[in-house]
Length: 359
Picture 1: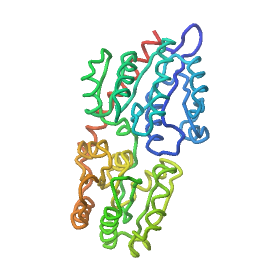
Picture 2: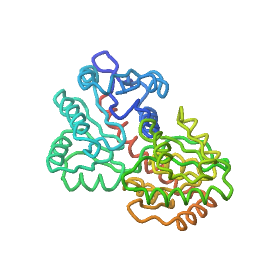
Picture 3: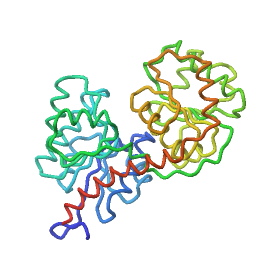
Picture 4: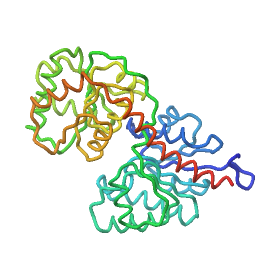
């Protein structure tokens, strides 16, 4: 059945952190677009529209940095989808949370179908934030959560809306098979959890590990605006050992395809970034996690991957031993395939709700 209403084609606004040069959100967008029936017109919120068009050709875009333009886009669509990630949180800023809540309330006023796809809920630091999000969620059409913590909080709020929960949608992203190699790839980000001592221990462990057989250490910036400066910051503090400095190469990937190619030819990926962890694991690449956020630890545990919580005291010997073990063991293929199947729940919810509008 074609998606038409009153003689016109149905359309949906995909709202998220898109076109912000964050490879994790790029992966989410690609998976989301692949799951929407092909007879729908797609409008995507984007900071860099050229980047989004290169990623998902054929979509229309609207400036996500302009609330007024995004609100105007709601006038010409039939549904609003908040794409994957943790959009309903005030950890980044209260302003970001208000932005999404305003869109949800206006979409509710316009009687649009409102879908939350692959969402995380929180962190919500203030009581007022809790109240606002709870009241807003009561008016959405359906939700797929990406983690048990988000689902649990929504259930405690006793929301009377259809809800499902599955692993992060990026587990469904296609990946090339792992071929092996002798590169160590670091997908790291700045984090307040590590002081000078913590960074020193971590970098000493990487230096020792990489000196025993890694031809190159690639510092791969997953978020261009946040991660690319980390190397210079550590270098300026004289924290990078001389040997590691000689073996290191800084890289800002131009596309997800380039990232996946690097992962498929590496010896080990050590990831702080959630979606770097997932994309490496889906390729079958040996992977270890450094958890700066509970979502990273949760994903590593789901895939039975080794992890270290950056809230804990770090030990260079233990890190080196963990990474040596990880390098000799690929992720459990059967576990990864199960995660891919479980993550299909997001698509099932999305397609089912959109099809209701085509009737």
